[in-house]
Length: 289
Image (cartoon, rainbow, N blue to C red; front, top):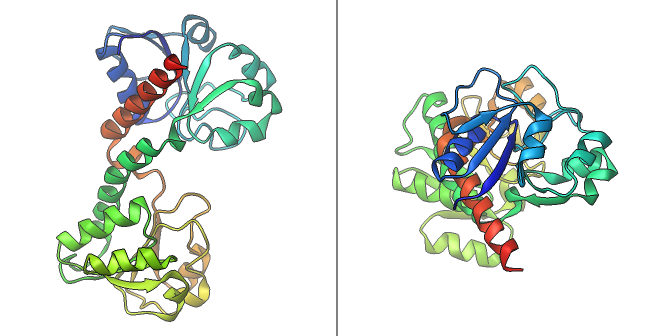
């Protein structure tokens, strides 16, 4: 897709690969918020106001903010304040972002913008599952002193991440138990030869070497964690606020890791191209309206 006028404001390594991908596709790309990053010659680094002025489409990062005050710009010392003035400057543009609700909570004026949240798209979530579970497995291999082969693993939740992770662990000959809330999911889990338990029964089970949580609810509270062995490894993959009581895990001397935004950390190139393809899909749909 060749588009004149993409503007990329801030973001992590995912946005760097996204930017280069857009430029390789023949689009003109303007960026700000990447002080020490050397882009290819076809990418134009300039100040925020010029990026917005020159661009038809503005791409904001995922997450759009981490402090609820400024745009997420880890590669820049300059801060872009998320206020009425910034929102006004974006008026008339199509704005792609992740976690758009963070913007609308900061200032009501962002509600009047044409916000297109790529992180809420189904194709984004499905494609993002693969780099997420690969990142989770990398953590497990690094942090667990044994092998995945023969390891007793619990995957809490049978959504996109849970399904992909269970299959990957099963392929490595782990002993896989998966939890779900619905009877139809339990049946599917059993049909794939995994051990199945209801999520409500997780607190009554124990003996797992590695626990992967994908449910954004407090499933692993102090009571449930107390049933874990001290050498258990708990990896929380759930979106904020997660599903593990990390203070309790610390008191109980259980290693617990909050593995948020894994694609951006472990596979930023793939994650950047997932964002790009999702944005292209949104543009195609918008142009057909």
